[in-house]
Length: 300
Image (cartoon, rainbow, N blue to C red; front, side):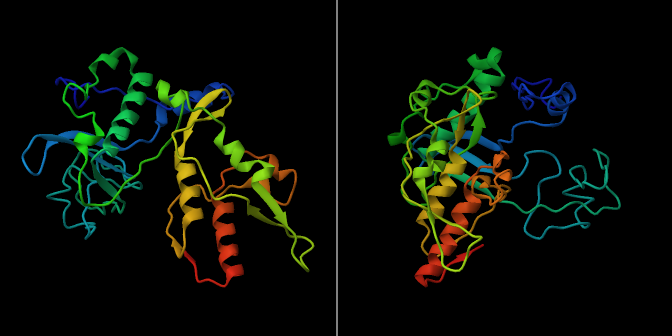
């Protein structure tokens, strides 16, 4: 509705459920959920004034009303000014009317500004999603080649931090290009294969088992898993494993997927649950290896 009288193309895309969903589950997903991808990509003047570059803003907070905040996190004093019509609280329905009483809900999250060649991958993520869920408007996508913004060499920048983006999405809501399909492999199955883990018997611990990874190497070319016949980009999962295994002194990690590694659970019947992500096992194994080596290591 916000863009109704403008030339902006805006499409509402809902979460696509699985074939096993009931009618009510399917309707609930259509009405209440969408696949979370929160980023903005723009073309912007280069700092040296020699032309344009791509600039992306990507992070974890929702790009919607009531989410703007600053590092003081005011609850009341901005309700009649900055947050007059842009306040949100999950316990109160503010709507678009001026908020008198408050409090507004404060927000603390991380967003990053990304420039350089990595922005091309973020543009690709948007384009693939758009082509899948807004196919009638696929012709409206900006051609970066026409703007001479499709070359990693032209977008290269010195300084700053090196960034790598990854994602979790499947073929129900994403159109994977041919270069990705040529690299299809069941990476997760290979990581969980028996040859990738070996049981270590410990003394005086009849009821416990210790697993060790036989390799710390993960191929980081772009690959796809296959799940229920659908291609899946699970590079977030792969990235976490890669860096957990490389960590020397500490790990700082934020994730909602610390429940997992069910293939290692002691109860054989519990191992059948669909909770196979490797993050909990990898963190545990890293801690155990550092304890065994007598090295200081911290996980936040």
